[in-house]
Image (tube, rainbow, N blue to C red; front, side, top):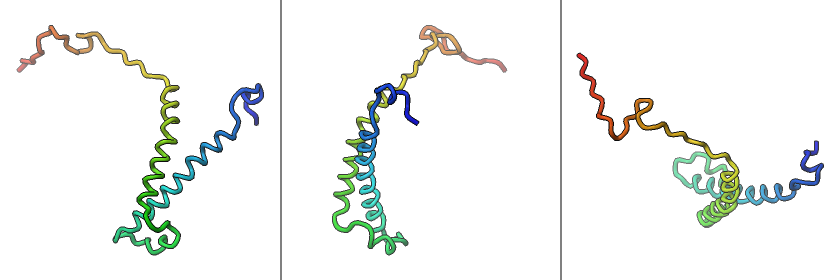
Length: 114
C-alpha cells in the first residue's frame, strides 16, 4: 500500500532509507565479528575452536574500534534529529509551602507527640 505522502508527491523514497540501513549494517556486522574474535580469545571460552576458522584474523582490535567509530558517527545525526523532534516534558514546580514543601521562611517541623 502506498502512503498518502507518496501519492501526493511528498515524502522521501525508499532509496535513502536503504542506503542508511546498509551504512549501519556493515559496521555493525564488522563490530560483531571482531567482538566475537576478541571474546573467543579468552581461555574460558569453550566455543572458540568452533568459531575460530570463520572469524577475522590479525589486528582485530583496530577494526573493532574503526567500526565502533563508524557506528557512532552514523548514529549521532539520527539520535540528534529524533531528540529534536521529540516533545519536551513540561515540569510544573509547585509553589513553596504547598504539598508539604517548606519555603525558606518556614521553621522546621518538629513532631513532639508522645
